[in-house]
Image (cartoon, rainbow, N blue to C red; front, side, top):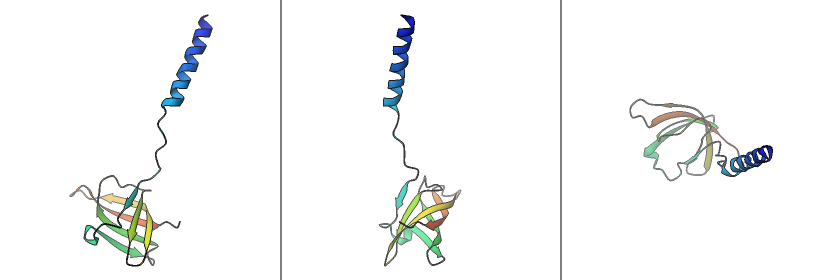
Length: 102
């Protein structure tokens, strides 16, 4: 009787674990700057826009995140390769971006 109860408790615990797991979060966040005024950020292209340095405001941007930018003729998605936050203001950052091909 004890082993049966233990088996049922174990199954119930396992079922609880399966159904209460959190869904996987995306590996990266996407920040869309296509509707931002160019006064809110600076993008300095490198190698014909294959890479670039970007300075902008915003908390939480980290390596691996994606940033969408638009110039006069096209929209490009970049991945954050390196990022450093300024001390003052603390939500201002500079990053090295690499264009992501779709």
